[in-house]
Amino acid sequence: MDEVKYLNIRSIEQVEIPEGLEERLSMKIDQWADMEKEGLKKGTAETKPLKRGILTWSKFYKSVTIAACISAVIGIGSIIGLHTSRKKAQIDSFNNPKLAQAEVQKSLWLLASNLEKGMTNYEKAKEITTKTQDIIDNTLNDIK
Image 1 (cartoon, one colour):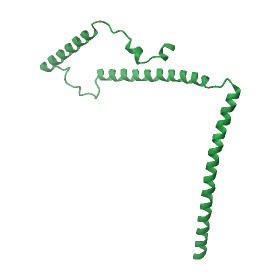
Image 2 (image 1 turned 90 degrees about the vertical axis):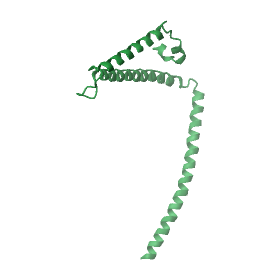
Image 3 (image 1 turned 90 degrees about the horizontal axis):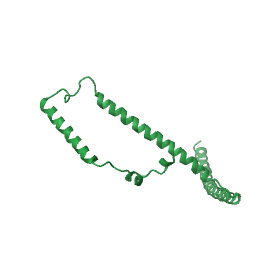
Image 4 (image 1 turned 135 degrees about the vertical axis):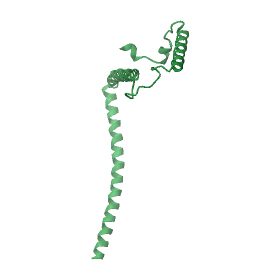
């Protein structure tokens, strides 16, 4: 599992490609193209679409294979992500109590200053609301 942890693009680029792979692939692609041309000339049943369903069996198997690969990648990625997040949680803890206390005090000071700003805005809003309510009450009393 530790080998997968450090997998990156450079390690993938270092994978050796077998000799002659490119030639074999291009020969196979040419062979498939020739088979497709012959099938179109003859008008065989293989080139005609199936009328029974939307998906042919080969498309169905391809779809299932793709879905299985995607779910495997997501599963492996989530397992690796959980593993690294647990390690980060252990790394983030403080070993020095004085440093931990200083960080807590800093956080509490930041919270207090933001709360004070919010309370100032609240007082202003309360004053405006009170004035508005007084104006509405006076207007309603004048109408009666």
